[in-house]
Length: 286
Image (cartoon, rainbow, N blue to C red):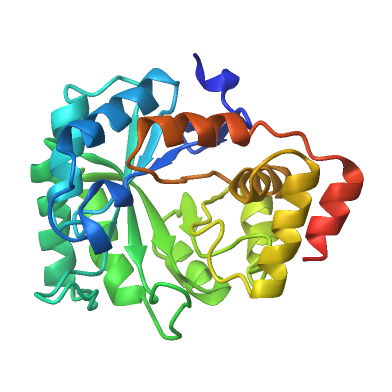
């Protein structure tokens, strides 16, 4: 299977050509994204199956585990295919209870970049996203110092491209005044539409928008509506949610995660779902 065979085709940003259906590696770590996986062999198999399906965009972070996910990626895929792009995040760490405290001083960011390089077995990182807010919402304030520290590492040749995660439009503009931004990764789905304007803004600027949690934050009523639509289409809520995201804007790239090869194949197949115009209108109203 080639990139163009995957749902949504490909999207080009800067010198990167990414298929719009990617893979998020967060679930490869243990429960709560903490510690080793229950089945390391299956985790390795999922990554190899993803590449075999034509996926060339893998999203990760060295604080998944911590370190575990990147180590599995290296075991499964190194030496890496020439067209594979690994996108990672910095700006957080894991504490001894499995929490996600910020780690955003310039020194911490530099350390995390080197952790990613070492654990992935790379000399340069394709894309590094600066995580700014919490899991669900951006946090206001300047990001100039933090983004500037990553821009310096980009100038040194350790990073090819920079992105942002859980940010506002104002923070995007602030970052762009320092260095180019190739992607924004925020919580967004058919029920959580707060970033509608940012989706349009990034599309106009040729920036990839990468939503996470395609089924996250639904109210019971919204969830019931999505389930009813999926049942009518003889599909699943996740397939409908992924297909709607691909339909929403051509700059949206998907990174659904799974620790199962079977589930990975189901996700790819499900995202090919064709949504009739009346269904798109109904989903827009969810």
